[in-house]
Length: 327
Image (cartoon, rainbow, N blue to C red):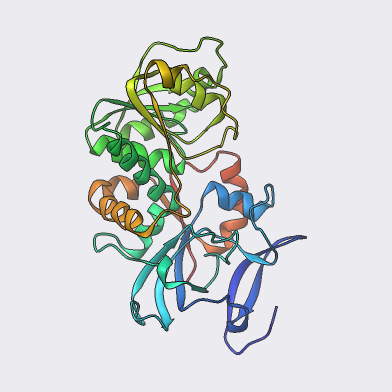
């Protein structure tokens, strides 16, 4: 890395591994806003990037971390001034653009979202990409006309799933949580889940093209056989918002749910999500996500813990949300 006068700490992925390094202003990428990062978060993709167990970074060296929250240190954009509190999620952070596991980062001004008034900077990272994705799924279901009824959440104890359970319950849906860990039932019940299904039931392949109708809608974070099983169990004209592939990227099913029951499969992406939809989602998060429940499922960890936490999240040992205290 180049040398410079101002140094800061970052977690950098290289071809031979990931480690903490001292970087300088000369190492910052192109962009018109420089942010002093105060918080980041931990997501499944972060676990993959930090451990190197999946190819997340498109080039090396790459600063890890798909989220960041902090204050504007420098700006050449008329939209942002020094001291503004901002949030950045997605947009290729840690993949094509250096990410949030650093004390200072430079980004493009159009990627920034102003901190919602109802959320502290730390809470925005308790929400993070996972919570934003959850809200985008809820918006997708609402746009499809699923505004009430029984809704399933797969991977319910994970970051996306747990926030989705809390939002949906707050909105008045009857939420069924799919999880393979009975010890998380009390945790999910506190978030608002009223029923449970073992994830093994949904992960088991069935040759039947359709199953008994059980849910009006679903938020799926798993993909593969689980998503195919969920689609077979959705009510006529129901919908599934699909946002994850923890169980695989394939979809081993049939078209029968689509052509016989009119089920809609809604793809949800939080990386390149357009700014107006992103802003709407953050505004809704500030009003629809119970902050006491968000706090209850959030743990704070120092920057030094990230390598260990990356291993734990891949092993399914990090229920809820994790905030990383960078500065």
